[in-house]
Image (tube, rainbow, N blue to C red; front, side, top):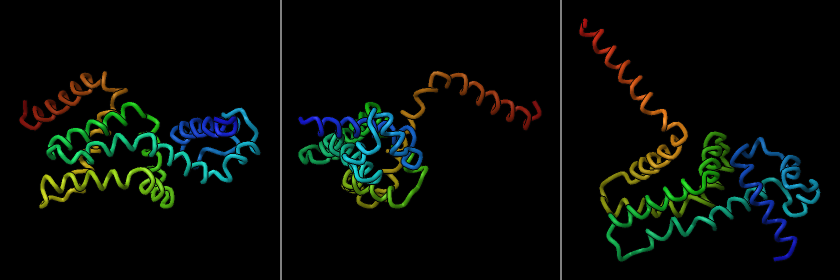
Length: 190
């Protein structure tokens, strides 16, 4: 690997984490150059624009994670139940092992920039989503597969998103129960 390609790869790694942490809008090429320990002109030598850098980051994410998405869908010999289990397991693996990936997707959803959302969907999510949808249609051709896919992905994302405060859940559950019981008791006059 040449020093130029090693430098570019290093920038992509740092940019991926920075885009995930700060979002596309907040990250400037100047601040990224500083994080990379290089001048802004050196950064522009590797990437002509922030958009080009972001495109390369998304392409890298796709290449790094595409095997996790495709394996269960491309396994034609397994029944749909096994393919579904494998798909969900692989999706959970990505979420758990790639928190920056999850954070980047959430940031894009919040920013809702149409051009970047389109790029994210087309570069990273489209074929995987469509493959998952086809898998659901195989299981039940009469259902709305989009709803199932979004529900399954949402359930998996929520589980991992709550991991940092899950240790407080018994307290939360107790408080919710107390509020509910108190409300029921009040309505019944007890």
